[in-house]
Length: 132
Image 1: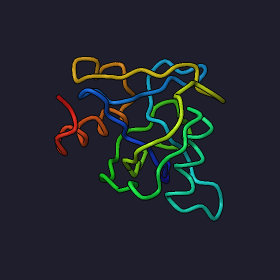
Image 2 (image 1 turned 120 degrees about the horizontal axis):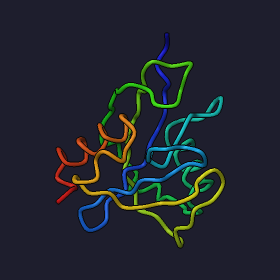
Image 3 (image 1 turned 30 degrees about the horizontal axis):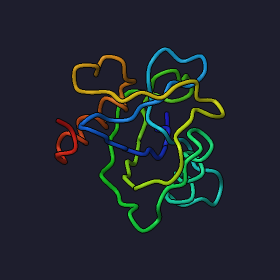
Image 4 (image 1 turned 45 degrees about the vertical axis):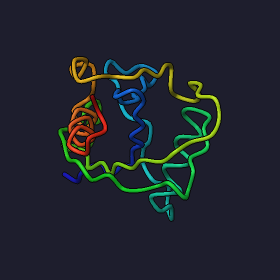
């Protein structure tokens, strides 16, 4: 069984990481998702963030933070998720859109609210000194 290959945006404010709840999901995920055919990481992530949060990512500040692999949650066709995590500054007023019902900022104490790959991304953010 192949890994589900996705990109994700790690956005931290006041030492807490941004997470979103997609319609019908019980756990929180990171903004991002699957690439469409022919998309590179930048194109896929900037499109997903625009669709989910109505924000424009800043290309000049876009950088890879790392890649995490974790058990897939709510993805019956995949055993694991491979998630390439990126940071970038943004422009616009954040608002849930598309399939996203809400966004929240999560600290280490709320780790249990995150899907497994998002938990791994929280650890990655902490390892890079982004969390309190």
